[in-house]
Image (cartoon, rainbow, N blue to C red):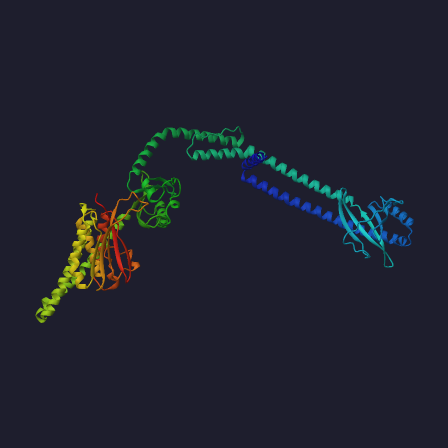
Length: 630
């Protein structure tokens, strides 16, 4: 059953889709008009029926009051014979009365027309009939009560009239009034005519729609499908409908056009395919992104590089509007220039745009118009895209590096020049102690300048990609040499140097000189930022492999910790950047700001990373891991 309903639903849907928009609108308008007219008709029929019921109610009330006024005195005198005769005459003379019932004050029926029978009484059996009064019947009220109920023959009006004489309640008279047959026949006829007209209208609409679909809509839809097929390049499309008149001539002309286009395509398809293949091969080999669009901004050609830059992989953008496919930042920049170039107002344009999605990148976009062979009209616009992110980053890094180096070199050179000029110009006026202080300062600034140059050279070597020899390194020996170097410095500052080297420590894979430089930078920084009475410790021990990473090779950890001033959390992410110095924050000590950058580069050369944990006022610990020498 469900399958049958689904099939019928699909058939109706397909049939409805064959109609034109005009036919659908006409059908909807006809439906609305017919529904409105039918609604008005049914409303009128309902109004007539209500009026008829109201008239029946009034007629029944008046008739009941008239009959009650004539029989009440007779009932009071207990003259039931006269009551029966009068009621029989009244019933025979009035066709609207369906029944008449007389009941006493207890509800016992003592007379009725047309179905009254005498009571059957004997010593063993007594049969009596009682009237079932409505629950809301007023009883001894002198006003009649009217109600209606449905029967197979129509609505019957029931009138209950109390029989009262001298304010004494004698019983009730119940009269049933038949509906007005003229009004019933009229309303039924009006209803049937309305339904017939409604059905007739819709039969005519359906027939008209079918005829329209077969004679007009179907040929037009076939022509529309054929035109779309021709537009997509399917020149084999033909329409085979046996029609005459204007539609037949139109179909013949369409088939003739399609045949000519097919012949033209066969003559030129090979040449066009070869030229297109050459163009696509050439464009796909270009390192830069290339997009070719027409004057309507529709994409004609796009190479793989452009797809990668614009994140078009897996998307068919050919044939779509290029402005709808570009990121918003690019779209805002090049929309106006593209339309100006398409209108011939300019020949080329260049842009540099920064993108944040999906990653931060900088691209250069070149726009160039494509002219026809006679260079008279614009056939399209070529968009060349270059990803210059690395170039921009290198330029920024180079500029920042030069700026930092220049700044760091200028300060000691300025100090050296100032003190030497002072000694040269006023040396005879200065005391021996002052001249020694000046020379001491010059020597200090010279050492500072030497350290800066050496650090810059070391960092340059590390970042130049120079290869280093890696061999087995005894960390205990490197730590011992580092501590001997800084022993006097630590003693002068009142700082305790602690060495904790695990016994029988295996050799690690690395470069002895580079690791010595790492230890020297870390210990030197620790001494620099630790106050008198503090401690600087070097620890090294072998790590046990974790249970979940059994495939990991054994490694040795080196830690350098101090009880110095610590590093604020906001500085820890930038501590390994070039020329970043914690003393820039505390304004107490001096340095080149390259030591930790050198440490990071050396440790990364060893296939590891430098970590740190620090708390201001508590101290700092740097650590890294090295692989064992097999």
